Amino acid sequence: MAELPEDRETLLRREYVSQTARINWHDLQTYYAHGSVVAVSAELDLVEVAVQLGLDNTQQFQQWIAAQQVSPVQDEQALDWYETRQSLWAVVAPPWVLVQQRD
Image (cartoon, rainbow, N blue to C red; front, side):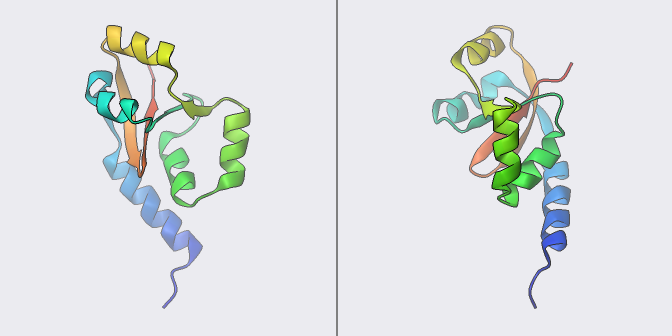
């Protein structure tokens, strides 16, 4: 029996909600060094971004990238987070780690 798109979306949403947690930037250094960490603007819902990534929603990602709401973590930002021992919200959406700074 084929899985319906909304069933996959619901499954992904449930999985990503359960995996979302705060993590110290220092603990993400290996992933950052591999270029696997993506910054998500605080304006967006971190879980929704992960879900759309899991659904391979290229059109939505192009819009977020164009609006600079989703982007690879820049070196300056990474250094600032490292020096301030920043804690971030994160979720793993293979092969990426999505991070979001919320105060």
